[in-house]
Length: 408
Image 1 (cartoon, rainbow, N blue to C red):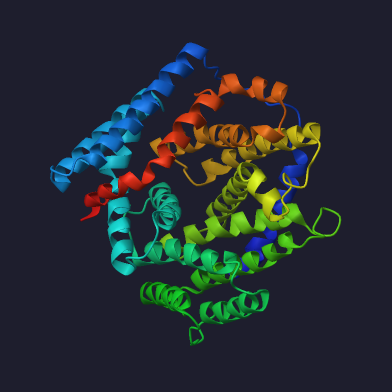
Image 2 (image 1 turned 180 degrees about the vertical axis):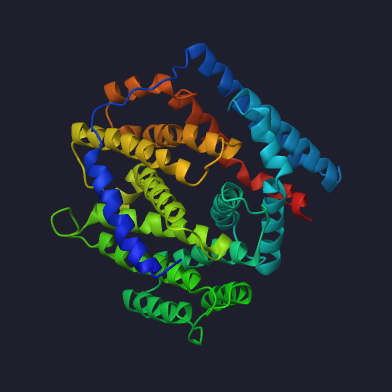
């Protein structure tokens, strides 16, 4: 990593992202793809068929775990091809390069580590496992579950639950952050709860893989994301608004530092160009999450650039700018993948707009009907129908417990 520390990189990358944000346009972007209503309806039918099949698989208590896997992944392949336009090289990457095995290994290991983990916590952590596996693939490492990928992906569901618990006082949260920072800095710390003990055991796993003297960047990256998490507490202040809190800067630092840590923990060390792309992509993903969570954030009093914007026209301009920002960041992928495009880089290029379009649909009550209707044809599903299908499925998720047979 040279003479620069991760802290130096984080400062540089934050400034670079802010510069890109203010350089891009706030006009409606041009979209290449348009989906006729008949095509959207077909994809909705494919989605409902896939989700119904999952429920049927979960309800079958007779078949073996191996048969479960075959039926589940067969249904996924059909859906990915028909509704998501996955090509064969995308599917080969998922099944032949280690992605699916890593995911199965993670869920099994998470259940063994803590049988009380909720499905939501495992899902949250599994998303990060997929991100870290993707980074392995992009930079030419074998795609597999490592102890650091397992540990880092689980740390933040635990710490988030602790910090989000209304029964935990502000003083207790501040003391926890202080202890956690000390533990990340290499000090021995006495855990004050069962949850905290699990967090420190996960840090132990990272230390088992990466010696602190040989891989200082690993621990600098963990301290960087912890610092960003601590700064984000300012966003819960009742007086937080763009005139007294750097709302955009905090979001960029938090999202960027998180994915930068992903990259460093899969490789131990990475070059600065790769680090800059990962940081920028993490910043973009954070903005997507902030748009998607606008209702929840307004309810909970969490300040983001979207939750603080009450006028629909201004919110639309922010969304336009986020589209352009995401495209600007994605163009930096060529610094990571220097050879011909591979299946994952192709998906990353294509997915940026889709992720943001999805977030628009999930926040439609705040955005304005005409703007929503302008964007709707560029999304593969009709918003209202998509969320009706997924909400119906979510209400039945308790019946998915038998799918855990996949990981026995």
